[in-house]
Length: 219
Ligand code: DC
Image 1 (cartoon, rainbow, N blue to C red):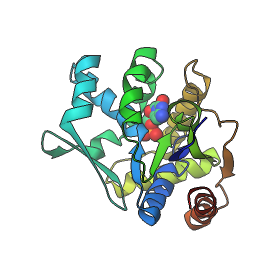
Image 2 (image 1 turned 30 degrees about the vertical axis):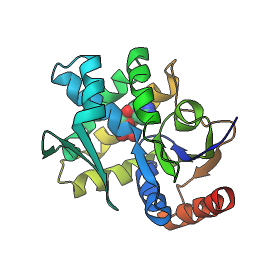
Image 3 (image 1 turned 90 degrees about the vertical axis):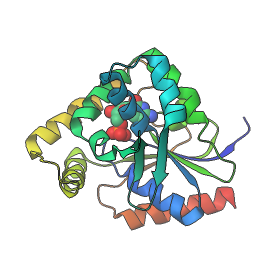
């Protein structure tokens, strides 16, 4: 298989995929695909009663994704809806839709279209196993559920959202179980993925490991 210039980063919720992706994109000048955001957008638009084809068109044509060092921002009809999309409520609905074959199929091409030869970092659950099987580098990033819940707690608090820690842990556990046990594209490391457990590591340490891999493979 011909390998393409993609760093695929998969892993469970709040494992640090987003922060790692942004650091890599910033360091190497790569584009970013936050595939979870597409599933969250799907949940948002389907709640507005658009059907699957309308959602596909809207995501491809009417929505802008702007990345900076802190976040990927989503603009819909001139308004930033990122904070809304990042809520735990939307995450739950996104996880439900993401188990459906027609939804995954509809988002597949959109995700492939994010490819840019100069480099793409793609984060999600099935980047290395399905969408970018041909990625040059595959990372599976994980961490204990307590650490992930703590990170998500701080992230939501920073966004000014109300959070209850026990409810957050329960939500994360439920979502992980759903994402890993579904029939289609379950959350699993690709055979050729580098598995990184970041429970005891800082973002800088994870970044430095990944940076070395990219320098070896891309340059
Ligand atoms: O990464 P996230 O928390 O923003 O993702 C939200 C939901 O979308 C997640 O619970 C499962 C789904 N998802 C998926 O099924 N496949 C992906 N590649 C990315 C996300």
